[in-house]
Length: 456
Ligand SMILES: *Cc1c(COP(=O)(O)O)cnc(C)c1O
Image 1 (cartoon, rainbow, N blue to C red):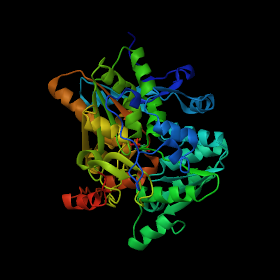
Image 2 (cartoon, rainbow, N blue to C red):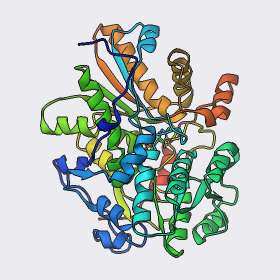
Image 3 (cartoon, protein in one colour):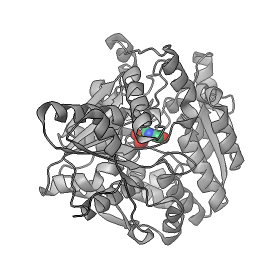
């Protein structure tokens, strides 16, 4: 076998032709989305006012294993995919580890993250249905950027509710989104009932993803020919993100490699769900047994300290209920948290895999430890990682250091979801030494749990 290059690039032809729906191979039945009013399972038609029809169908499809990727979407993918699978030789050397470290790098596009993989799909289906526009929320801004790119390409209007603190901290993100022609509204705003209610309760709030979601959903359902799209958490998003794992697996196979450990950061779970999907299939089929690790911030610890329960997907409590690990839809991470991954819940599919023991481990790190890893990685691998991605880097480094102790030559694969150019305020506070860690107390978390809906 040839020496593995620093960067393994597949050809255009090797871009996957199908997305893989992991739910089709999961052993236990999937808990459906339910109505907040009746607690009855929803049908795809119930979602039509919110989501466009093809996406509602994908959301509710637990059995179709492969979804053909429409040619128009594959054409768009060819602009920035396949993304490279990188061998971290320099990081390995700097750590002095016998472990082999690989990362799938999704930051080589203007959105600076994997979010474009789903944005283009969601914009395509909206266009196909003949809609005029879309609404969405964005936290750190990657999703808003990705969707604004996709909407510009397909000629759709877009309104983005951007978490207020983030809009203030990242004026350039806002400018990029506006460059692609989208409207940005800092959230909470007075343009929706949900936003006005949240402001009345908490006038100084810097906003949250859950609250921006409420506003974007309300705006979609009250506007003509407009639907809402979400960049994470949902099963349709995990489906689109399966391109990450499918490409990674093909690239590794070319060199006779297979990961012993697979690591991803977890905000709403879309990159992790997409990265692990084909490897988890092997695990579920009983052919291989890789070890899966989800990594989250200690300040927003939905998997490690949350409850597995039905909850709203938004703070304003207007979305359907999903069964997931959650901190409660009213949970707001501490304002000093700069590392992204701020969502209160976790993908229902990943939540179930974790609950049933297939996703082996969830761990959390404080943000200063995450930035230690980010800076170390940047120096050796010459990529400036996003703070979100750096959670996975932290865990990969720690696993590689364990191999150094034990002498084991494990193969580690992690998802490098994006670049951190718009996170320099956070990097600066880390470099100045003013970055602090805040871990919520049990009492802090209890407030969030008190907001959980009562579902029998
Ligand atoms: C959005 C984002 C994440 C977290 O979202 P998931 O849905 O959990 O993948 C991670 N990294 C980057 C760079 C992001 O933009």
